[in-house]
Image (cartoon, rainbow over all chains, first blue to last red; front, side, top):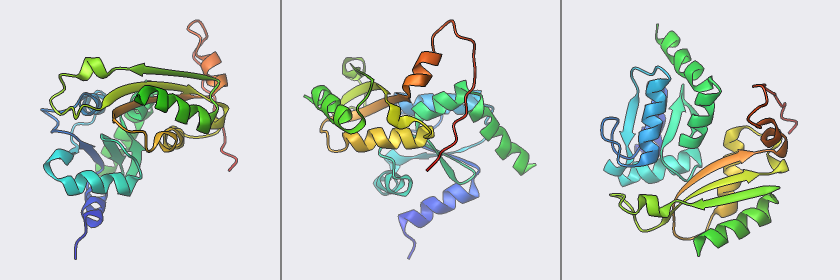
Length: 109
Length: 102
């Protein structure tokens, strides 16, 4: 049986950048999710998987358990949990988010 | 009142040198998905964050406030007292790396 944990694990291993958010990249449904999308785009991310947790309550609960993190949005890069929008903002200011994003694009060739 | 509870929980758990809690609920009251819970911004300056990565710092704050009711969103800034002093506006940008000592 495929569990929600399996689904999430597959998403974060198959896609170099995954953002669990409310709404989608074009129409975020929450200010924090909107900021996360904006930070990713400003960091040079051309392509990322945006998973709308509002579309599936199982994902919404599941991702909180998998990451052991209580809030949405949540960013994964190269299968690793990076953090929510506050941490993304800090990493962006330090230039680290840009480096993380760049690392995924080099890996894809 | 969630704000007072937030303050009590964070003070008890992290003994912050500085704690600021801003209630941003009003700015978000028209929020489409608002469930009536509050939006709070917290700045926590605590020695306990020393040597910890941002993720670990946020986890400490989340753990401290777990169980406080009526929180819809929580924005966290977590710094050590040393980092706060270095953040003085006139100070030159300088990067300090701390090694986690477990």
